[in-house]
Image (cartoon, rainbow, N blue to C red; front, side, top):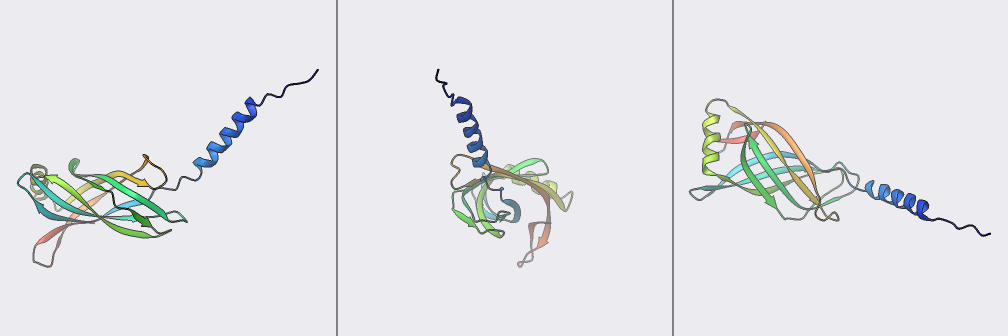
Amino acid sequence: MARRFHSGPLLFAGLLFLLAACAGIVPEPPSVRLADLRLLGGSLLVQDLEVDLRLGNPNNSDLPLEGLQFELEVNGRPLAEGYSNEAVLLPRLAEVTVPVRASVTLLDLMRQIMALGEDERLAYRLSGKAFIAGFPGRGIPFAVEGDLGLAPDEGGGTDLVPL
């Protein structure tokens, strides 16, 4: 009598091994820090900002980004959100500064300016997703917290800068 070989358990084990191997090639997410924040102007109700994000690549291979999405909260309140569809190549074990345009409503900006009169530091939280080429539809989340303070600019005024 011939014995039949059941390939079901072997096939299942092979698929599990393949999935585990694929999961191991997902790169570590980039580190993201707020590097600078500039008011660009805008309309009566919405102001445009340029937010410089400092991206670091902790991987031992280049990290090709297809885009970024972020939200910026100051003192626990939403201030701005931004998007970038620019492709950026993060060299292995290196950092790159990427400018991203964002928008803020005039009302939210005025609230933050009034809060600034009470304290020279503002707590911020920057969170969002980095979209890595080769992983379509999946953004790798990031979040960082810090403080913003006032620093003199070249024109005799002040700018908000990360501390």
